[in-house]
Length: 120
View 1 (cartoon, rainbow, N blue to C red):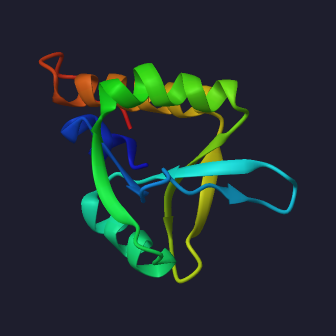
View 2 (cartoon, helix red, strand yellow):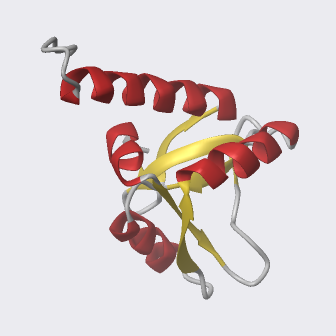
């Protein structure tokens, strides 16, 4: 997920059907659950995967408090903004995603805050 986009909008996007959200099994046996930082990105994924998938949003707080711990418990990694015709991209452990979100939030506060300093 683009951490700045998710952090500024406090929303995570996913695709699902009546049975839940799809996961992807990689060649190394790791199972990923993908999420996106914007609705259009998730809509492209739903269109590519088809099978009646619909796009839903989730507050970032809910994702952090419920989905992330569940994914960690289940041994899943989190796919972030998968794109392209085969929906590929990076996947991270749930804790790595939380660390990235925290770092992006801190950086945004420093850049947008009143401190006058800028981090790159």
